[in-house]
Image 1: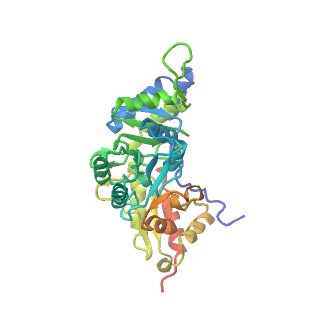
Image 2: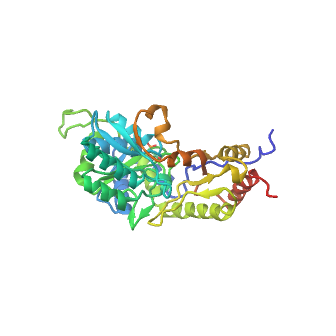
Image 3: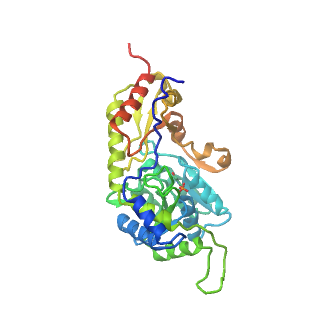
Length: 384
Ligand SMILES: *Cc1c(COP(=O)(O)O)cnc(C)c1O
């Protein structure tokens, strides 16, 4: 037995169900609405619209399904190109591939870790000068709960007449300039996967102020079934709707969103205060233009100054039964996406090599945080 076997495992971002989730789910169960339509699906969509101050929403089986549908709604098809954040989870670019289109990868801005607007502008102006075709859409990610710089990105996109889809899968509850994450661009996509800030175990939502976009996504998500009594299909559809039982869980989760954001920001502040003074440890910057939901707190480790690298810290935490995770590996370094066009400075790669995501659950107790911080501080070089 290891000396730490009595220590309960601390996970990166486990589900946190502390509201009316069970009550709402059992009510849905008892009502026999155990299908992909029902009152909870509609209420979940309406409640999300109110929370995000958007006009329309469709609940889906996953965030990835939402990204796929958003691109289809914009008419993205075989051979098209879609500009994406390079530093992201693979789901962002997978959705582009599902359309038969090609991702064009834009590197991260080191001051936000999100799509670098300067590089986006460079890519579009270079295309214009070369007479190259323009991308069909721009798909920025709100990394780890921080909005991309939409003031800059939306202005550039408007200048070139290219629609923006916001991958807000990690950012529900964040905001920028008073606009909630998910509300930027033509459409926004949320995820309710098990480790996201709110969860339905698996699920997602597409939101937009444009009614026709959401109506079209809803149609494609329900096997593109025409509104006639016999089953009539004019085009190929998908089975992408959220179950009513899961929507009931989502409603209970959504009621507690502000509290989860508050707790996650508190966790972030604790880490900054406890670790920020250590040599060689830096934090993912919080951009001055917005408020992150702090879905995951991420640090950068300078091995020369700290004494061990981020993998050394990760292994030290793992030995104490604490889960942590390297920052997403940039897509241009992934075998599946190596051949994509990439415009970058190496910023994302440097963040990946040094970056580590720390346990960030909203239910972390002070004793958990002390335990985590103690292991990290102890992993560094003893100061002489
Ligand atoms: C989680 C995530 C997704 C996909 O959401 P699922 O609900 O898991 O399909 C998409 N993009 C990003 C950036 C994510 O973190």
